[in-house]
Length: 353
Ligand SMILES: *Cc1c(COP(=O)(O)O)cnc(C)c1O
Image (cartoon, rainbow, N blue to C red; front, side):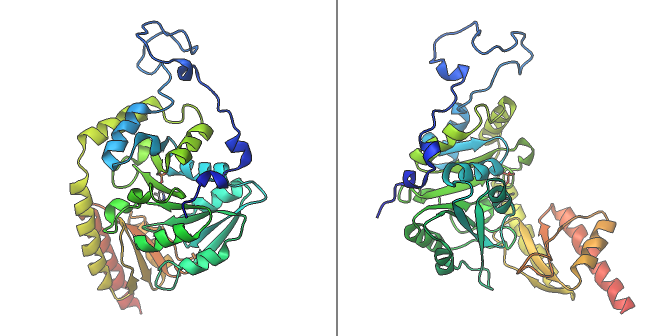
């Protein structure tokens, strides 16, 4: 059964007539005098409003990702903007709910709370695999969205595409797949199923593999109807002009393959070295640019690293991540420094115990 994603949209959003900017009314032509938007006429490089539809940027992203420009939403506050829009488009405050894997990225639940939407976390299996049936069981007729993060933050594993596809087939609602780390994974992206699964939304970002976290450009990919809803609900000029230009420059000029390959090599080497340390009980397999590492005394290890100028993420108080630190893969020099510090820590602890 092919689903119509418009069935899941809030009625007020379906009926919404979006704000029309000065530049929406402009239909093209050879204009040399711009007096339509109350801008300053003095050219300082940034005095004009940017393209509210990000046409050029979407053209570049479409080519890069092998999708049509009409399937793309871009947000100038990173993926967080797309996450918030999912709630605002599909979930009626105080009525609807969402289901999500747990543990996962914290923004899904915060955005749910902001939008007054009930958030139902479903624990991953103990091997961190996807509990498809339990996710479906947690849903009821008021569940509009299921959140999947693959590769998942913080567990680092990606889920089989077939599991996600099965969920999208069985669930009568929207399945969002957050692929912030997909470039580091051998499992393919779900972008190529968007035409067969109109209830799937894929999130990606320029913040991780592309190394452009400071520019804050996030993306959502969906069928044309859903992408059009994102455009309707977003803030009119939601991506600033400098970011649009910068990202186009990086897409046209950068080849990220070498950096991604180095991060993957370093990740696997770092994992192997961490496994040698006596206070490390587990390094979970990673499809991302970070490692989830289970240690004895996580707070002590964390503090020791901080004292020595290295910061990692302490995830040890997260259900199912007890004892775990999350370590981002750095440059070869940075990773070597972490390993040497941890060896030193382990030596110190042997002496004192
Ligand atoms: C880092 C990350 C993002 C990206 O966030 P941006 O706001 O685009 O920088 C999205 N999802 C997950 C799970 C992440 O870990």
